[in-house]
Each structure stands twice: as C-alpha cells, then as structure tokens.
Image (cartoon, rainbow, N blue to C red; front, side, top):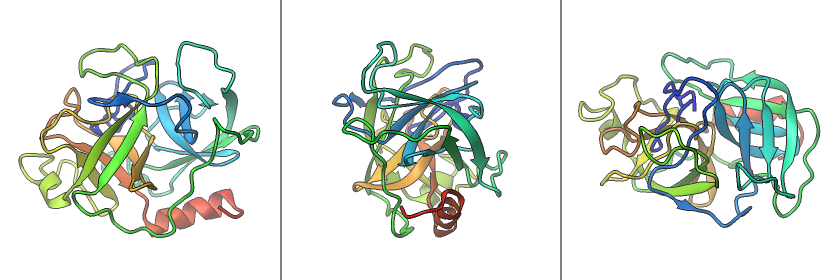
Amino acid sequence: MGLLFTLSASATIILLVIPGDSCVDIIGGYAVTPHSRPYMALIKGKECCGGALIKENWVLTAAHCKIDTGTVILGAHSLSKKEKEQQIFKIARSIRYPCFNEQEKENDIMLLQLKQTAKINKAVKTIKLPNTDTDPKPGTNCQVAGWGIIKNRERKLSDILREVNITIIDRRTCNDQNHYNYKPIITMNMVCAGDKNGGKDSCVGDSGGPLICNGELKGITSFGKKNKCGAVQSPGVYTRLTKTHLLWIKKTIGGDL
C-alpha cells in the first residue's frame, strides 16, 4: 500500500501511495464469494493495507505500510457493513524485516502480533507458509486480493473484497527500459506479476496482501508505478518469500506452522 509506491498504494499488482487515511483496491478483478478468503486481513492505520493471517495471533504484511498502531480486521468482506464474522484486533507490536530497504523496495516484509488470539472458524483461518522458496516461473498463474480503488485516479473504495488473476513476468523483462528500467532494480527477492495485455493489477491500498500462486503463498504485494496500475509497462511487484525470509518469520513468531 505504501506503495509509495511502496505499495501504500497497490499495484497490478501495483501499489501507489495516497496521502491520508485512504484504502484502495484491485484493477480488472472480480468480487469473491463472501468470506471465501478466510486468511485475508484488512489493516487500518495511517494507511490501509492488506495482510495474511499466518498464525492465530500473527499477520504477515508489507514493511512499508504505515499501520504500526492500527487495527486488524479478520473475517471481513464488506467495508461498510458490520458482519458477524468480523474479528477486530489492536496491534501489540509490529516487526519489520531487519534488512528492509524502503528506498530500494528490498525485503518489504513485516509481521504484526495481535493483542489477542483469533478464533479460527469458517470465516477466519490461517494460511500455510510455503515449504520451499521455489521461484515462481514466468507464466505461472497467481491471484492477489484486496479492498481499494478499481480505477487509477479514483479514490472510491470497493465495498467488498475483490481478487484478480495475474501471471508471473520474467525479471529481465520487468527490468528492461520499457518497464522499470532498473529503477528500482527488480531483484531475486522480488517477483513481477500482471497481464501481457494490461488491465489487471493490484493498486493503492492492496499493499501487504498475499500473492497466491498455484494455491501456495509466494509473496507479498509491494509496489508499482503511481497512477499506472494495470499498465502493460508497469506490472505489480511483490516481495518473494525466500528461504531467508521464511526462516526469519518462523524464528520471530515461534512454534509449529
């Protein structure tokens, strides 16, 4: 989200940064069946971001999100309606990855510890961390979800959780002069994802949400180009969950996952 496009905003998955307390949404996506993504977390602070529940009292999100003293809502589908499925928590502490580099967008990972433990049920469930850090191959089908803008220059939020289908794009292509042109460098700690014809992406407010590839958690929505969510030349960029990241997560939260 972030996306300060560090994903304070989102991306195509592109994330932009919008000043103030604004959330944003998916470009070119579709509404999901209510509560069918029970691992999704809605995080409200100085910015709105997404996240994934990985343990009953831990949420994985993006380090650039300005939500340290915010609120985490689990079991949400609608932003405007009070739903019986919703569980609301204060954040006990936020822990950014030690090697997070906001300028270079590297290692954009943060863990949020909730003050209470979530009640696991049909609408609220954890998502399993991957067993390996296999790099998703170009062309791999993935999904990203969030609440937020559906058009680049509109600040109107989606009232419901939406998702979009995207595909992994080769790093060499993502770094070339027609795309990010090495500003910043798309490293092995990142993956690009979008659509070869454009029109599908994450955007402002989707930052921190999980990137799911072939049913497995593979990344975290990180950044994109401002006001260009869904553009062919500016696919969304995600933090890839590497072996080093996974070891840090497990060490930080402890216990079996």
